Amino acid sequence: MKPAAFDYLAPHTVAEAVDALGAGAQVLAGGQSLLLEMHLQRARPAVVADINHVPGLDALTVADGTLTVGALVRHRTFGSPGAVPGPLGDLFGRAVGYIAHPPIRARGTMVGSLAWAHPASEWCALAVALDAVVEVRSTRGTREIPAGDYFRGPFQTAREPDELLTAVRYPLLGPDTGVAFTEHRRTGFSFAQVAVGAALTVRDGVIAGARIGLANCADRPLRAHAAERAVVGAGPSPLLFAAAGEAAAAHDAAPVPEPYADVDYRRHVIAVLVARTLREATPV
Amino acid sequence: MKITLTVNDAAYPLDVEPRRVLADALRDDCGLTGTHLGCEQGVCGACTVLVDGEAVRSCLMLAVQCDGVPIRTVEGLAGADGEPHPLQRAFSAERGLQCGFCTPGFLMLAAGALEHDPALGEEEVAALVGSNLCRCTGYEPIRRAITRAARDHQNGQFHDRRQ
Ligand SMILES: Cc1cc2nc3c(=O)[nH]c(=O)nc-3n(C[C@H](O)[C@H](O)[C@H](O)COP(=O)(O)OP(=O)(O)OC[C@H]3O[C@@H](n4cnc5c(N)ncnc54)[C@H](O)[C@@H]3O)c2cc1C
Ligand code: FES
Ligand code: FES
Image (cartoon, rainbow over all chains, first blue to last red; front, side):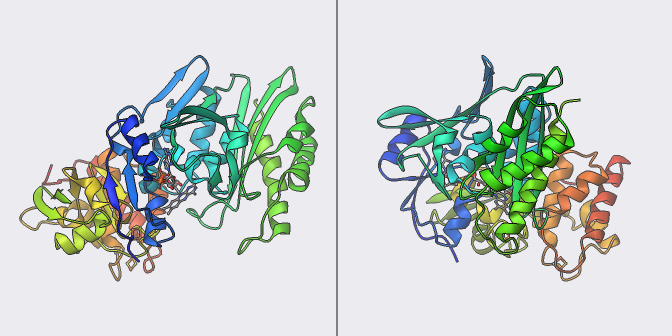
């Protein structure tokens, strides 16, 4: 099918973009989800506001221990070593290789993924695990939403339809933190059946902090609180990580059945991947 | 909307609806049918072209987004005298195509990658080939063809006449 007819706007400032959204327009960022939905006519916006001409939205900045990612920073950026400092950059670099493939990564944006809120999205799982904050702007002003409150269900978020996601912010990870990302999928460019990202902080042989994000383990991205509780305060060991995997599968995850991956299978994969991710994340 | 697509250095003034995707504009409005459309969902990669030097899915961009931006399609690979591009020679030498439906997409995918990084290694090529679908070759000959072109490039035997 072809997209249904719409009016096209190309705002040149954030204010113009926000005005367009206030008048009912839908944002076009990388277009790597929106345009295929429009081809299928599952999305039929009357007005499209293409934000690709808004200067400044492509900024990636680090200040006061916080990374700020603007709405036009493409997936691919996170594949360049050093784009983001420290373990956070390492974690993003590991995750981005699982998102689609190079031509999609050249256009698609991190913030667009957060806006789209696919339950299997790698970025969304990391956003909840890392206590990200999304910044949204409308004609009513600007507000910030913690990632933990932002995701409401499959493709559902706390963003109002007239709000533009301008940026997402992450606290940087300290140097004593190790990171890992693992994913199980049917083919090299399928969406994740299960994906797990983790950041482990170890001090004096004891796990002082743990952040574990789960993609496609429920109707929305999850932070694996039960698995984190299972490891914090203990020394890293294969037994401990196996227990954390079981905790994630039994208490954190709420998988929905999918073709080729029923609930029992997914719980099994979650337990295995959480244990593996923690093992790989353990700083040496 | 009135736009001008600049494809392979030629200007195509067009009047298109905003909903026209780049792939359809190239094929139906510019008459450049070398760019193929398979899935229209970003999956197959048959529609891959270079937009501003970047290999992208032309089914997932609007023509109006490409007003004034340099575009390169498979028609622009060969030299003005018809001499095949080194990638095209490598695809032929390695039997990198059978039915040929996926070939324009793979060629532009590889052209974009080689322009970014002429020292493309075997691992990068293997990862790159996973971007597009081929239902005939089993990918191995395509991987070999791109690797051969990259090697020729590094040995200085890569004469892209358009550069
Ligand atoms: C073949 C293929 C494979 C893929 N595989 C994966 C994968 O493995 N993992 C994954 O996570 N994704 C995958 N994707 C999706 C891809 O990552 C998209 O880039 C991403 O989901 C959306 O980002 P975008 O910038 O392209 O947004 P768009 O497609 O432009 O927009 C998506 C939605 O978000 C809204 N939106 C976008 N930006 C904003 C904003 N700033 N403010 C308000 N609303 C906004 C749009 O209105 C639209 O509703 C795949 C896509 C394809 C085509
Ligand atoms: S037609 Fe564009 S990716 Fe298949
Ligand atoms: S040669 Fe037939 S699809 Fe690739």
